[in-house]
Length: 211
Image (cartoon, rainbow, N blue to C red; front, top):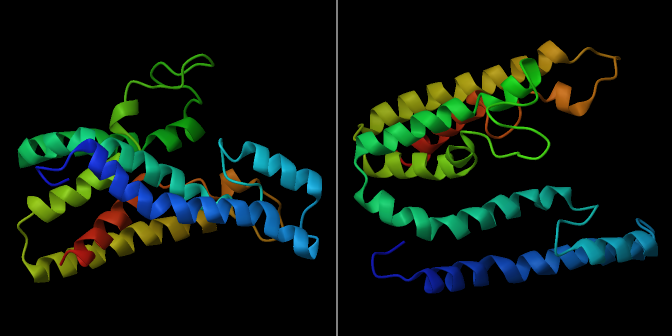
């Protein structure tokens, strides 16, 4: 945010850009498939009824809009801190964030409940350091505090991206057996968007974008 920008003006500007087309697509995916028999009236009405709470049944790819909205909501809260934070302070937060990218793997390979998780509490000890906010802070750190040369950004950006992408490809090969059915979450165990390999590849891409 700009230093003189208010929370209300930030929300008004950002949400007027994304909400009208988003709502339009939610309605289209709830109604348009009726024209070619892709859904029943019952399914359409149920989707419309649930629109205030989630995307329609045939628009799972719109999931990303909800994390985007959540980032816009939190930006006015973290912007004052980012304007004053030192590089070391941002790195401390990013260290916590990097650790939380291990949580999906801990859930899968260690325990489904970690650091306070139980059926009545899903907010873990590291909840507020996790999620897509970490990528936003990482981009800010790269743009403001990382004083690498363009050549070094290109070289290391390519390296980090390839390492993250290679691990993701290997994880698919490791779990997937041709002709053997497997549940999608088990096959795509490393594909969650807040895992170490995705963090590595994203860091590389950010370096390339900001080179």
